[in-house]
Image (cartoon, rainbow, N blue to C red; front, top):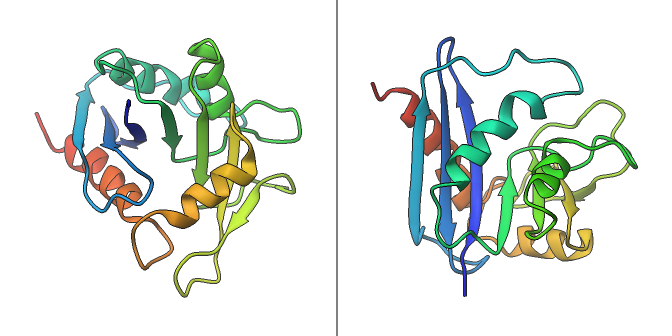
Length: 171
């Protein structure tokens, strides 16, 4: 069975570090494999409500190197920016032809968010904001709750974040 892929991107002034951590189960403590790359070209400038323009090409670039593709993709961010407004995850889902479910796990609340499901983990009272395309949100919530780690941010998501940041240090 193909793994679950966790993706994150970190930015510096002149580059982006895109990372993927693969795991065989939601409960996995350790990565099955990792992948990362530093992209020297500056990403698209940020445009409010159009974050996907900057990040989507970076994610697709790393996905092109993965064989087989993960069975589910988890991104750091939103899939939907409203009831029917596509965010990064929805654009990624569409770019892949709707063939792979995309789960969004955002650490920060998007303005006016009334549509995401909230997941509390550990002792934190700050929720993670979960959205999904190609999967039921209730399933995505259950998967995020089951992830390894005693803190708000699951261990594999922390590892993916750290890998994307450390990739920026490479020259």
